[in-house]
Picture 1 (tube, one colour):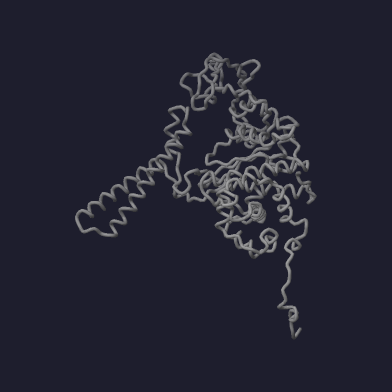
Picture 2 (cartoon, rainbow, N blue to C red; picture 1 turned 30 degrees about the horizontal axis):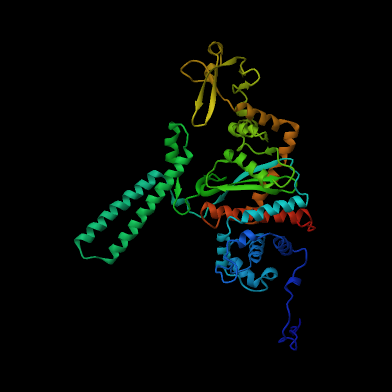
Length: 496
């Protein structure tokens, strides 16, 4: 066993030494790649927000590119808190490439993000251009997916109209009692303080009620009156983050969350477009997301003409909207998936198949149904065709297994947009469609898995849809850079 330890060189211990910060890291380190990427960006839109110039105020507290480098590299390193980034800028050697060992305070980091929420999107577009420059986009198809991110808000702070009304009544009753006590006795500081607290809470409830009513109006616009009452009863508003919504998670629990939808190119899993919103409505986000992706690639000669998505996106209305735009949507329907997963439940089920070319419905028991009427469904915002055959149903031995209608025969309702959904399913069931869809779980869901599992990012840190969108797109930028560095093996061809 050694009886002494090696000591530092006492002669050189007090000498001043020069630190070459750029020589601390190898050239293939991610920090060096991010440094090169940001150094080539045009940040004029960032700098335009400051009154920079001789004698003018409002100068940026730190260099814009420096702040971008620190922000992107911190997210790349799985650091999301401004306080953690603050510590890292001064104490972590890999951050010294940007900061030269000087601290950047957390409030400057937060202020920078808040100031440039609208400018961050331009940086995201640059990652798409860089991917294209490195031949990492093939434009074969665009893979779409959606997932939940928990909001920075408590589930207990969600209020329905009924709960807001009850809360208001309780506070109003207590306020009446406090005012009565103030009249009967000398002015008490405690009662005055409680009075102010109750009045502030009542004002907050009034604001929440207005925001909840606006949310209900937006979600029930042009809907059938019979559906409005149920929507009013179930729609909630969160007092901590009003832009979030109560959404069912995969484990069947509920949490205040945001829905994020992404569109990914399959060659190197590059994100082409994304959106995040406090409303769980994947089908209606599908086409706008696809169009946004093509807008983001408007500088290129190619564009996407085919989309691949799961059954959450393939509603009849969505399939029809894609066809109207000349875009091929490929994916299974919910009915088809249910039949495949539970074949025993559908073994003896009576089925009705609509044939568009013949404009007839064929029953699995051999009957043929013809169109009898049409009407417009305000709730679904589409035209419904009604098919029936009273004579054939009266002769059918399985009539009671087919319908419980008091009319004594089956009336089959077919959405006029159903043929578009059928064609989407047929494309999915084709050999080429199955080959395309086989890639979906990897291409569309890898970003989600990396963010939640590898990055341990399961809950948003900021509140409000504007701030959440900004944070979301920063994660998109970092993901694209991560994929570009990995796919090129570090041999990145930088844009001119």
